[in-house]
Image 1: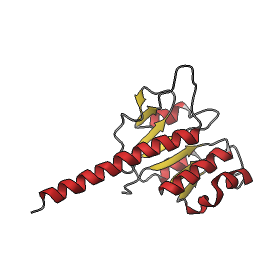
Image 2: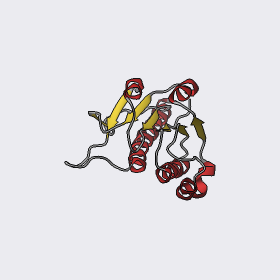
Image 3: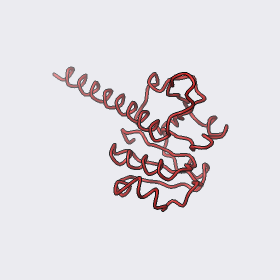
Length: 165
């Protein structure tokens, strides 16, 4: 199993946000699943502009539908980032192989996607604030997941070294 999480985008609407998340994934060496249909032509110039030349460095899988995405999954937990959750993203114990799922900008995700998620997490916001930009939320969630997974790997290695005669 890949020690890094994956990022999945459910029916993204805005090419600039998708491009920003592809750039984020390239820089963090995280694979991305784009679950269609998208609200734009995938080769859109706005997507290319936002992703710049980073998009060529992303392990990207495109899926025509939710069902195609589920059929292609190699395991691991599906972790949904949503404003409709009670568990904070920083309180969750991320594991290698988790897929962090971001909803579409206009509609989030439908109930059947919520039901398929092993965890539903929220980024707490100041009172009266509705939501963060999806690319910003993806960066926060991926950063926390990578921090936890990397720290767990370092602790495991340290423990093995300390017990080796």
